[in-house]
Length: 181
Image (tube, rainbow, N blue to C red; front, side):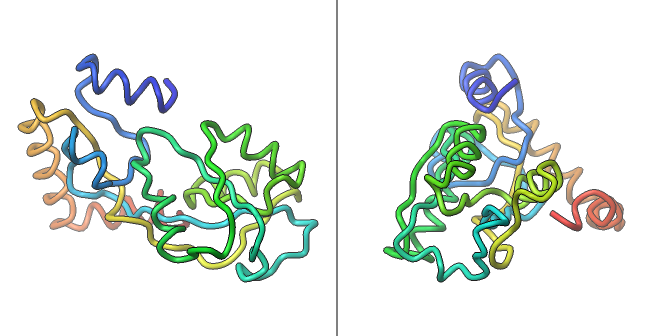
């Protein structure tokens, strides 16, 4: 199920929870409720390896692409506006394929994606892409999302998250699965 379908099915009440790298955002908190965050939300720039960029300052006056989907609530866009206002033009995309195509065709100088996507595309592309700049913390973390009628389910999830944090199970899982994200 893609991001748009996940969002729509949750909104329509056809599923109880949405799980999948969803950052907590103010705009989504109007319609939805969130669990406690279970992971940091991180972003990083992705560039073509051949373009010789080694500093975010080199993006001055260029275009950076970001994904805009209903489940990210605009947190990546807001982050770029807050931290790089006027440094570059931001272009919104609905899917990663278009972002990568425009990056390859040098329509974009960079893409700003969640850290796990940057890692994935670097690994999958062979020598085509590289990360640019440091990993940035974006928003209030990644959480499980539900419609308000499922408040009790979110409360149960929160208790579970708190329990595994307390007995150190969470840190063990985090170190194995998410440490490099």
